[in-house]
Image 1: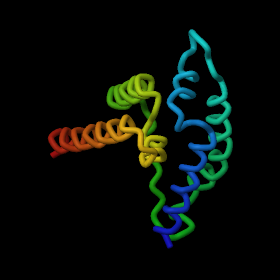
Image 2: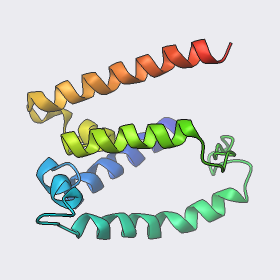
Image 3: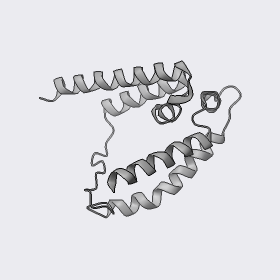
Image 4: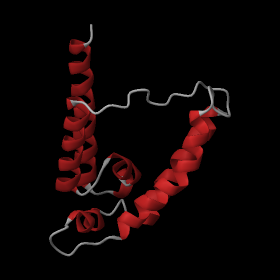
Length: 139
């Protein structure tokens, strides 16, 4: 049941990304172009997503397990540190250069655009590099 729920949630998330235009690099770059022809429509998408998620997140904070009985795994760390800020900067720079982030990249991976495949391969390489560096950092 957990795997089916995860599949359905992933499909719903992917469909939402596609319908909202977040899988369109030109639309994303238009949103990020504050000094040029700024397209604020993705800000409305983000505000809507935050509004939809706020209730379930508040509910989840008061529970020890999910509806399917899995342990609730919410982040415990609340403070900003160099790693969080650095990771956010790298993510934002990559998003600004490519006009796409990991979720939409996976949603449009089978579109046939070779650039998306290059992006996903680079993303996976970055994840492997991070894992290797983490293993060295924490014995």
